[in-house]
Image (cartoon, rainbow, N blue to C red; front, side, top):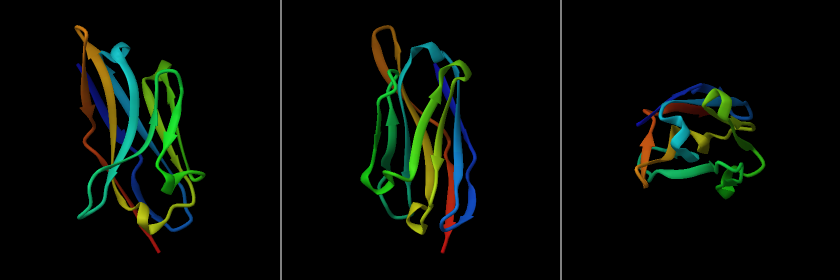
Length: 119
């Protein structure tokens, strides 16, 4: 099994930056795709950014040009660099990964970290 722990959230003013980290432990060799999701109050959870094991990245339109997803496999860590933050980015951010066990995939989520952006 894989476990995920996020860190790096906090309160920042609009225009500021934060970097989120997601540390994976357990059967990390079985991880392929990793992603960041967020959920704002009263809204559905949405995928913000995704990175495959081959390094292919994808972003939701609202964060393109402002957020950068990356991963350091040697450190079992994924990052989300968030620049030029806006109040609409306020949400709980969750780390996600898809891993494999005995030929079947399974999803793992972190506990979430709060990001609050003041205007």
